[in-house]
Image (cartoon, rainbow, N blue to C red; front, side, top):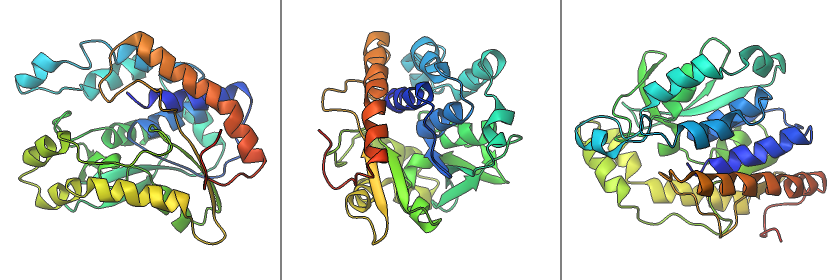
Length: 275
């Protein structure tokens, strides 16, 4: 639910006609937000966060304790596809690569899947399938997959590997955030006891995340990376269902868009926190 910030930023970009990018890489909620941005569907994902994701059909603790999904992606994807389907032709009319990060359940490795109109919706669902909280592992290219954020929550290294030299990273955490021990991952680790390689990656979550932040702050020579982050006052958490709090987080993202555009145009690096 913290992804409500990035959808606010991207809606702010749409309001200003800002899209200078030639490559798009997203994982989990960030990938779904990128999809709506590329489809130029302003407000679509705001509605998903505030009007749909807050409903008990999606997040339901009692269902989870009875062995079901905490977050029912099957329901959410069915509703969004039937009522506000992504404009797939528009996304791919730009002829720019849209890459979605996944995690291979069998190996624990990050998989960077270049998408197309015929498979995007399914790949987005797989990238958002946080283990334990969504109890299934979607098949992609014949392999069981799970949330892309497990193996690479901020895929900036992949952007560099693909040749990107000017990169914008939209995060869901404040500028100075470093990941520390999260009790949630002990539960996920237990759930993945039959998948030892994936379980090992979950145990490395702190290091993987913090290494990505270090790369953003100290990029390789010839690479400029700027990041757009919520302020320390950002209130939405992973499972927030308060629509007022989510709307507030969305508006913080929209407000951050103008400054992000200005910084991009000034080619400001990411080595310091923006004012």
